[in-house]
Amino acid sequence: MKEHKTLAVFLVSLFLASGCLGMVDSELEIPDVELPDDWSTVIQRSSASPHLSQFADCEELETALKSSIAEEYRIQILQAVEEEYYYRGGMWMEDDMVMDSAEGANSGDSAPTVKRQEGTDYSGTNNQEQGVDEADFVKTDGYYIYFLNGKNLEIFGVPEFGELSHLSTTPVEGTPQAMMLDGDRLVVISTVSSWNIPSSDVLSSVMGWDEGYGSWRTSSLTKFTVFDITNRSAPDAGKELYLEGYYMTAREVNATVRTVTHAWLDIPGVQSWLNLPNGYWDLDYDSPLRREVREKVAYQTLLDNQAALDALALEDILPKVYERVNGQVTVHTMDDDQCA
Image (tube, rainbow, N blue to C red):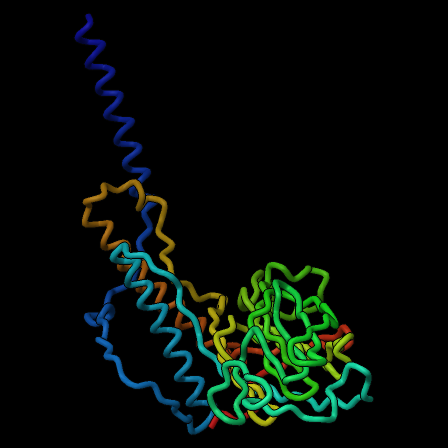
């Protein structure tokens, strides 16, 4: 009798297992695609001296950018096929920002008329080429010392050599990185996280994609605040510019600031990971079917990425600049048909 019960339990277990396996097979949906022979070929890259290349027109620039983005995501997807994981890359940008001339009446804290000579009366800060101001966290013009302390801009007067007088402390949005000095204008560079911008701020709304895609274009901004320091006791923040990307470096020549930022754009419809079907995780780790599933899902993802990129305009993939004036934010794009 005991043997009959054991046999019955064993048969029921087989039926249940068969049903479960059938359920697993039905959940394992593999994309119906045929893999080209060269779909996963990776061209070896070699190091070379960097140089700037000009484009003939905006169409050529758009093609080059989309090809670069597609290839970057392709490499990451191929790494996912091999079950290698990585850090997402980004995009470089270079932009010019022209400093507005600041006119203002002289005050008791403006620079004295007798000019002190850099290199003779005082030492400069980190400038290696004549006429080129390099960004730094400390600046001096011989009469005043400007330095970034935490989230504040501090200004000290130097009435006589060896004497210091504290003139002002000015809060800076974000995390201050460096600054550049040009007469009575001081440009403070700071990094601002998109997560720290209140949802009520108009800047938060214009940073997103159109058509309801629930994400910012990028998670980091580089802010340039132009201070009028005619009155060193009360610096006045004039122009505020937010550039997409994380600050890397900057130079100022003839009142024009050139900067490089590094950004990763969260492009809608473009992904660097594999959305594997549920049944995939129920397969044995050594099953060759796992590899087949990863490869076909990867190839389908590449096709979807290319379709998403084709639907974007050039202005969508170029970095944007947000200008805040009197509480209003203006969005500046870089696709004004001057791509050459």
